[in-house]
Image 1 (spheres, rainbow, N blue to C red):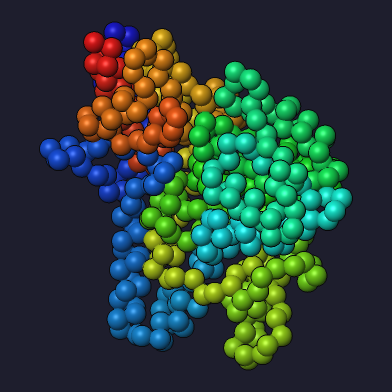
Image 2: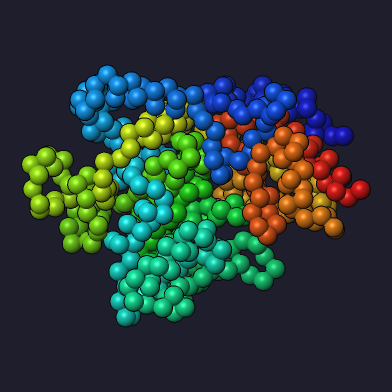
Length: 429
């Protein structure tokens, strides 16, 4: 057994980790026997930060004591509560504070963004997405095309990996934009592909799309809280993300949205409007003429659910305790790199890693397939789950594991590989 694959080595790496203490800021689920789970599922639902419960309980107390006066009283009044999240969101995605807002849920936000940024004409009506987009994104795009009276068979450009490959090549994406750009109204791709864990080159895609006159937006569900981004500097038109994966805000929590500042003063830009997007200074004059705020807040419709925002604020403050996304990303590269090393050393013949090796093209998640004759990925997944590992399975044959830098450890990675080895050996016997 190599020094790399040993409990002692993993424990040494944890002892040297300057962010190791952040794990104590989270509730780690336990198995029936009382041992902590090996929780590698933050790409699906992040664990609960201890601050989340504290902050939610604070607002329950405010509601109990103040009733409606809580909208304007206390350290965190409800009326502007979404603004308390803006700085944290801006840091995470590389934006100005006025370019981000917490509102709605992810797919709803994608629809609201397409109201503004998908404006098809007879000459320019296509949307470029990936062939293996998360189903909700595909449904949203297809329904928007149909809503505008076009045929998805003609208006959807689906990017596919090359034959025999699992991930998209940068040059193929850019070539498709060059080929179809003159007839494309919108490019909408993921920042991180949910199935393979591939990080797309958002800066290059945006530049290429704008050169052809296309609007460019991104679904950052698997990117926010996972990788570093510079949406403002990259000139991205819009982006949307959920907050319950790497941002640990709780199941179904309120999502986030980015709109580049160059769009904020365009009052002719179509949008669905609501009270909470109206100019704050005149909102309570109750006039029926909509005056949008000159920020991403103008795309809000309704006042947001405070209890959900409180949980998000707890999560963002936990990120701040860790030193921010750049320090978390630095740890993530080391942590996931260590897991990849162990997998390649111990199970090189038995598993295949779909996620690209290059650090610029990968985040926390590694997507694995099993090469074992007579055993599929689901069989192996069931075995490791029974042994105390929480990760997830995506059909037809991918096990997704995500060592999250906020609460996962090097010992987690070691123990996972040990359990995976035993599961594969058991399936082969």
